Image (cartoon, rainbow, N blue to C red; front, side, top):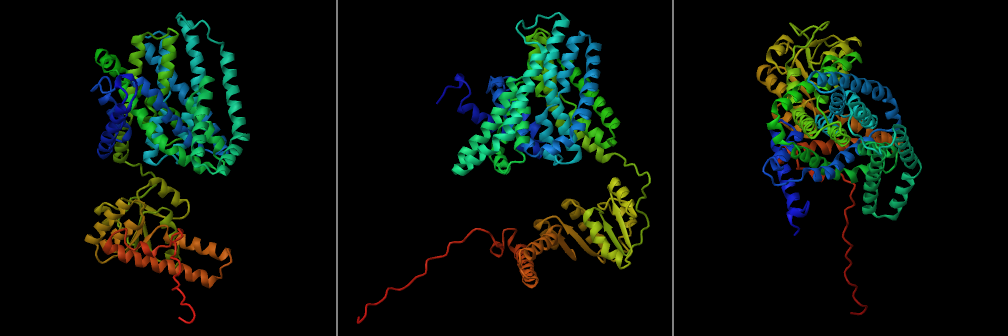
Length: 598
């Protein structure tokens, strides 16, 4: 067993995993998110906590690979055409946010008494938000694929690109400030040329070499070699751009983009994903371990004041840019809360500023503490912002609240599902009362000839105002199972004479609805999947009667499974499902032949 003092060994690995396993589930259970759990775990076991691990920087260099893997997987989802379509957001929205926030924070630093060059370096380091924190928060919230999520990714990409000119500016500011720079530092044009050459080399290799390489390895049939090749490509791309003065994260991202149209994309993603999750957790733990509590306690007024001032001013700049670029208030405020922190690239910039004499050790320690604390506060800021957004008064300009509705049918929720379901009812002249709690959805529906009223179906007073007590049928078409369950409970108790038809999210939700006594429930994708399957069968040459018979067989088997699951739980009835695994059949038994004459 290696001694703990001889570097990072098995004992430290056990401590790290144990801290993460304990802290992350606890913090998620408290609603604080996994990022804050990892940061707290790192602080507790680090040199300024229990002192179980005393070299956070060594761990940070290893754990930065988690950010690299994360950016590679993001790149795999970004086809070159999609990335090209985001160019205006990357170089427009991203550049506007970086420049405005940098200017505001520089002025803030100068107002605090810092020299202009020092204030500018500190401000631009804080402007570079944490890719790891933001992407983790987007993924946990399921927002990475939304329009706002794509804008966030665009801004992060611009910030990754900005590290190159910022590092060059640090050297310029050091000379302007009168600090002793690095004597053999290359000229700016040479640094930019090297970065462009590295980018060109990576793009050329990705376009003409990577796919044939993976094809050759795949034909060899060695899966472990394919995994090793995937890691080689990710790490090699990261190291190449890092050596050229760009960030490792940018290299991994570009490698992912170049492989996004490869036929081996899904295998690569599956191979890299386990490493990404573990290393990203280690990154957050190492950031928590790096927080110098002695500096925080010694300079607590500067550190806490700097955290609050920098985050507030940066959030104001982000909100202003978002609104000027056409985002709604809720989207702009959410982006401001998400990006208001500093990030891991600040450590790179501050390290460079310290190396060229622009920062002294005290300023570097204070600025690093401000960045780390801002990263730790981000999950809490988002929680507060989300609660404020939920509790905020919704603007109902041009939208009517549900009041004294008299429709024969009440439909709660008017998304895609309800819009389709309503067509046949309207065709037969049934009077529908429609309520929805998303103002944008109500306004969009109005453009297509629907009169939808604002109302929250989980509130009993709203249900009475919507005519639930007079309706013959109540259609619950909301897209959140917990919300649907609450509406069902209210309607069953308060309006027992109304027939209750409910959109189910999945099989488990269907079972809950059946037990709750609804009149009809259907899983939202069930019938569309059957229609899809029937179309495939007929297009592949199966005659219509046989195709219809196969679909009916699936429907009957599913109904039988539901009956069994109501009694035996979700795992009952598995034998009724058809799988694609070949079940070996026993060899036929032939009794030995008796000899003739015996």
